Image (tube, rainbow, N blue to C red; front, side, top):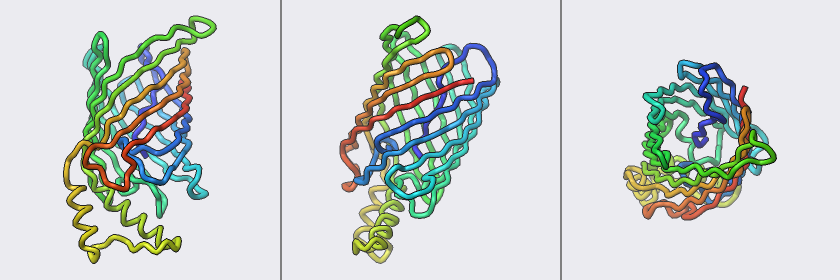
Length: 269
């Protein structure tokens, strides 16, 4: 599953916190990329964060129009360190578990190692993130994000704070995961009687084309995000919109432009 960092509120008091999250999205996005199969899903997650910066998490999600069981589960371990009020860094590892015949782009990358750095300017929040995704395939992703929080005031009373945080994100990386997705999709299509033959070393033209594309490190997507947040001391509710436009060398079967709508709720103890 796409890596989602769940922390409803920044707490200036150093204490152990537990954050529970529930989320709905209109489609799965893997670094801004999505297939021609629309896959809306619901997700749940729990994160325990300790005062020293260490945190552990566990989550699961269900595709709403594919299969009858859980579509993915994951466990994670991470550590954040604040150099100052403005600069922070983090390292995290997540292990994903996918069922057989998963229709997800990311199913070939069962592991993810993430390094990140964030800096808060007087007028902007900037972050850079590097991911090494590995398993059956191996991929590297680099993400650059700029966001601006804009206050919209309060709702009913001063405890209910409303804000929007428009952001732009650029993601570059490799596409080895797409080779495995193409092969597995061909197998599913053949099993469903669609008559497609799986891509294999015997199909030399398809294999060479896919391999050359996946080995290249290119711009994958431009992502424009607009979340609307309602937050209080212990919870945050969010309605979000994301527009993703793929880079110029994207695979033909991936949607070149896609909109995502989401609703999320976070509660922190």
